[in-house]
Amino acid sequence: MARPRYPRHSGPLPPPLPPLTRTVGQLVGETINAYRRRPWAALGIGAIAASVNLLATELSTSWRLAFVAVVGALAFTAAYVLACSVVHDVRLEPALVRSPFVLGVLVFVPFPLLASLYILPGLAWLALVGLGVPAALVERLGVREGFSRGLALGRADYVHALGALATVTILVALTQWVMFFLLREYADNTQRVAATLTYLVASPLVFLGAALLYTDQAARVGTTREERQRARLGAPSQPAD
Image 1 (tube, helix red, strand yellow):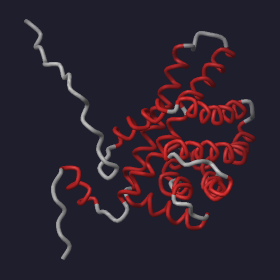
Image 2 (spheres, helix red, strand yellow; image 1 turned 180 degrees about the horizontal axis):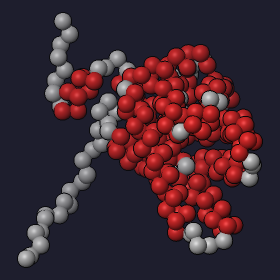
Image 3 (cartoon, helix red, strand yellow; image 1 turned 60 degrees about the vertical axis):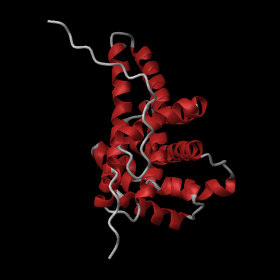
Image 4 (cartoon, rainbow, N blue to C red; image 1 turned 90 degrees about the horizontal axis):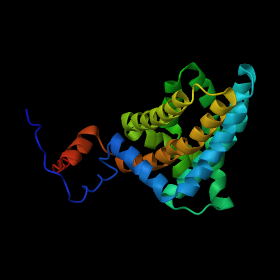
């Protein structure tokens, strides 16, 4: 039996949806595009995260949690602020970085404890308040205002925010697992180096994705699920009474 032949699509790809109606899959695609546009900046983000991860693996379990809570909070916040500056084209200046950095450290401190229970509670916490970091940087807010704004952004479409962070995290985890699976037969040192290099290359996707998520959630503030559904289907919004 002959195999059916399907016509090849040779035209341009359809334009991405606007942030208001962007799906999680499209957010992941835009995250990869942001990585491709600024690969060296992305690797700089990954170098910060990979350094913390490499040092943490050398510690005992009891010390690892404290190390990640203190040093990780500083390093991961720096990586997140850098990712926000890359995505939103904001020049890093001391006066602009101070508030988002302090806010990011405060937001990240509970994350290791929540993530040690299971990764989902940690992601749920970041989805709820973590967008205050790009908000403070882009909108030039103070720490208190940035936290309130981040909470409003997280609640605008919480399912989208949590789904996006979870999807990008799973993507990074699968990439690391595949690399470990390919090199599982080699010596321990080779596996450690491979894990570090994989974390270096893959981890920027989490930070870049979270920075892009800010745009999606900002467009959703003040809208209802029904309004977003109508916008996705191209139907006109209902006039207010």
